[in-house]
Length: 161
Image (cartoon, rainbow, N blue to C red; front, top):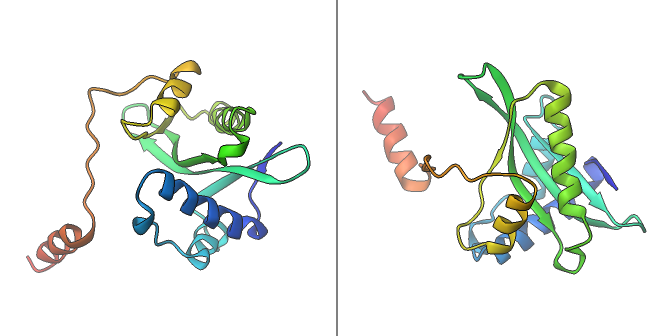
């Protein structure tokens, strides 16, 4: 079953984010706290959303965390999937596909024209799964990130000009 996250899901979301970061060999980079997640997901004006996957017994086995994007070319919003995670012992049960299908349904229902995400280039199981549902890589685009010291230096340099 797929459902919208509730405040009671924050500890499970936090734990699964850490599990995902460990899988992606970046646990030391996963610094978000439960309090930060609660504010982002359930504060006065949430900008981030989450859906939960449950097994037949009601146990949370996965989640999808996403936010709205916007295309100036299409003039419409889209969904950007930040994290998709299904616990290893529950993979292959259709939970990941159901989470993606729910977000695709939201896109179609709301008139959003894009549903996008990133995947690590070494994650062949996920890449193969995404291709199996019809997703295509955007090989002509290179994702960039400005963070940490570089972000601070650039931001402060700009502020002083």
